Length: 301
Image (tube, rainbow, N blue to C red; front, top):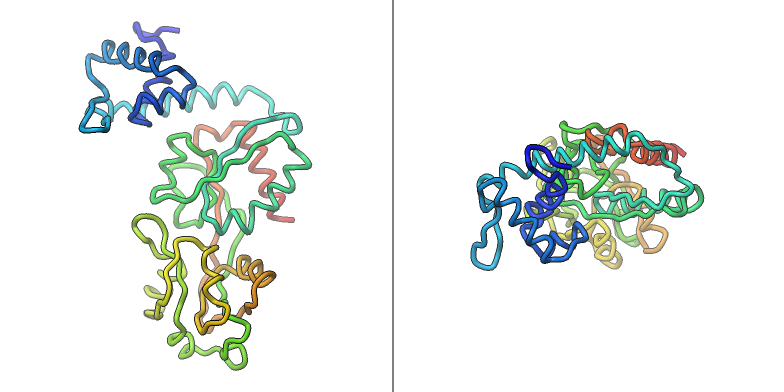
């Protein structure tokens, strides 16, 4: 199909090229040969009268025009996909559709195993791909790289629809032989307890409990070890006098396998809402709607 002399198939190539900034990676993304993708770039350059992508050193970078086209082209393609898929029925029992979820390792450990077990019975052909949280999770949703974000409420973008799945609370996790497990866990004890903490991404962002403790309670707890994932935390607690403030569901899971004990915190941290988010253009997608419903049912059960 052509619109104003532009072959609309070239928009798919343009989206891949501007996303990947590489002819080779773009070719892989859209399942074309490298020469065919290079030819598509040549036709796009001729149509727009602009290089669109230029080589700077060993890398390719979009020109100002190319950069300005990236989001509109991506949105157009997502609207087309949503329009087409919105008119189709979703047969979960026979579907082999892939769903991408971006989340922290907390959600992939405490929530998604139950989801996968459920899907194995009701939708055995569905494929799930997990992506680790990034510094800018909403961008992955907007690029179409993932179908869902499963994140705390403060991370969720206001630009796309979302719904609350569940709440979590924080507890303190210690070695089961820690002296604090034998006496009252006071605020003074918390302030002297060396912590194993998590910091995320290239910015080394604090987790929400760390931020609340520092900003709302004015406490600066001593930090002994900094990890990059939640699941790296428990191995640094057995046989030590360290502690970690973690989500209850994770703490309960770890206590099944390690000599650890859960203590109630001496400060009242708020419960954290976890939300599921999807792209606004996919709101009427039957597959997205089915998966949302399945997740809500599993979490409720």
